[in-house]
Length: 368
Image (cartoon, rainbow, N blue to C red; front, side, top):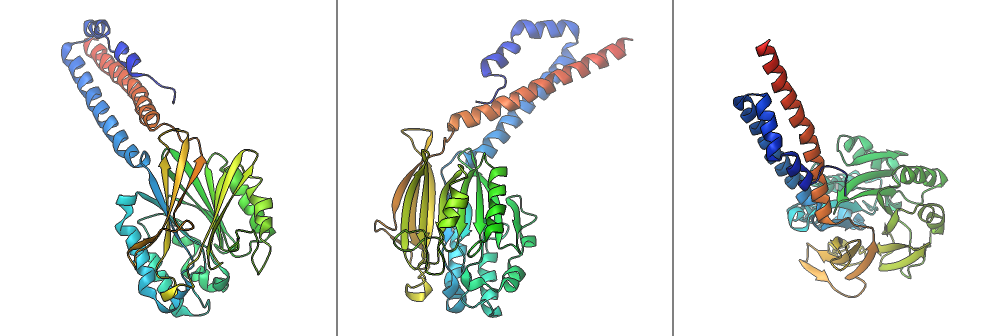
């Protein structure tokens, strides 16, 4: 709990004899005005605290959009149906962030596909934070950067920064009293990309980290894909950074997952890609819900669901719907609220004393 004035200390500070002492030193009229101002400040401050922390204290979700290439190619309405569903369900699911795993389009030289993808992703702009990265089908980086440049996101508070034509970027968000960072790495990140990502993760070592890259695992949950051995991403980036707890990827036409423990730290790695399903993927996406574990407040349950807004149904086999336990030291929600109120009360105490000093100063001037 944050250091500050407790409720008991606050009431003690306002004890009756203290009030009487102040009354003897100033007129009743000035005292009444001073206390009225402080009372209004207390009500306003606690009200603002409650409003600002209500969303942060709730379970929340992030949405994962796997390879959308065939939607951009032939089924753009399914892509837009996905992003519009996200906006329509932001409040109900308390959606804090959206992740695109790459392969935005099928043909990186086709402006029509880029325009369709841009139209679908624009539904999210200014409404929900999101991260995006290029997959191997987006390798015309000139086109990618034209439609998804860093400047597109620079004015948003969640935007962290980028490098290499925005093929690598990161964002920040918070939920359940915890702070998160999402690192997005483009297709087959090279050594400079890994160095950049390491520097960012170390700069934000206090934040829980999610790493997203397009190609990382095959359908056997092995850290390699036909195009390259991706184990270097694990060895050179995931292992050295203790704040990384989740890795997400697409590319391989399947669902898979694995869990590795490093020095008592668990890292979950999840693959999802539905592009070989009918209609370019039938609109399947991933919902990852972060729930406070009620039996142990320092734990989170990550509830993974696979849902299609296009089909309006869930896929419930064991590879598509499951739960993960993650020890992220989630602070008590009561502690979050009380600590913020205590901080505000401490500030109000300072403000109140300033008001009293001002009133006393005015009284001295008047009596001079």
